Length: 434
Image (cartoon, rainbow, N blue to C red; front, side):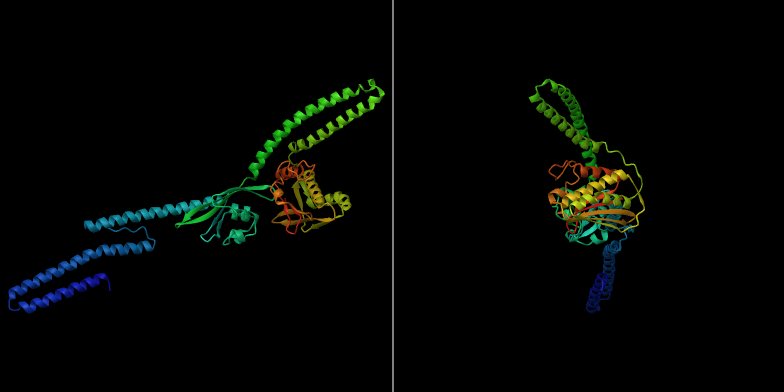
């Protein structure tokens, strides 16, 4: 039974009672009885009118509530002519207009944010209220190196990918540079936003590899050019002076002549070594753009294996060369890629020392060729992994750090993807995708 029905029943019952009392007491006075009946009728009509007037706002509230529950923000109420009810109708109409505008604006902003996130070159990962991954945009999908389907709905700690482990270790509000595979560098930020009154976490991942590489390259090129210029000028002048001094050897006594000549020769030899040393750095700066020609990568690897076999055999290092793909020609600079592979195989050989194994494999992957070179050496310490392709960084006692610098420059100019990291079964693994 509705509230309106209850009120009407109450009015009928009360007026019926009063009518019965009036009839019982005023039957002897007809005029008074008629007057009482008229008063009761007028009272009942007034009560019904008041109930109806009071029920109208309740109907409006109920109807407005149903409309909002159904998501209908387009309906408006018309004025009734009653000032109080019209005031309430005006408030409702303004409220519904505001809600409609806010909902439209919210949907537009939500659509814009979704498109912005999808098109952003920065990786964006959001977590739900339970700490599980709820969104991974395309950029983050590439950076994580794990299919989005295997990441969504899982905690970051449960995803076996290098970058997810780094993200999970970040504290709220922390920003950190993360290096992967010795060369790729990412700026990772962990922050939060509020959703339905509760905080949620999101990560912003920005790749800095190209920018940092360009900055490093500009810095070391300038340094090498300045150093090479000064050293070459000094070497040429000092060498000329030493050769001129050598002409005075016959004027010395016989006992001093041999020592004088030997000292001059030692000094000239050291200058030659210094000149060779500086040329190694200058070659990095003077590296020409690759002359791309069709080349069969398998044939190139065959030549590298044949070339390195005597040195590997002397160290009792076995070579496994596996071609798992019918490889057509690739566009590359044969001489430069040969230099890359020689550097990598030599590094693998030196990492093993003696009595080990180097495995080379070539396979097709999504329309590209992937060459992997894995050694059975001790692997890379954590202190070294993040600095592998840093210019002139070397773990060798007499190393200059030029090998991997040249590798990085050549493969970057070829626009080949590459990585150097610890292998799953131990040792080190180099991967090149062309």
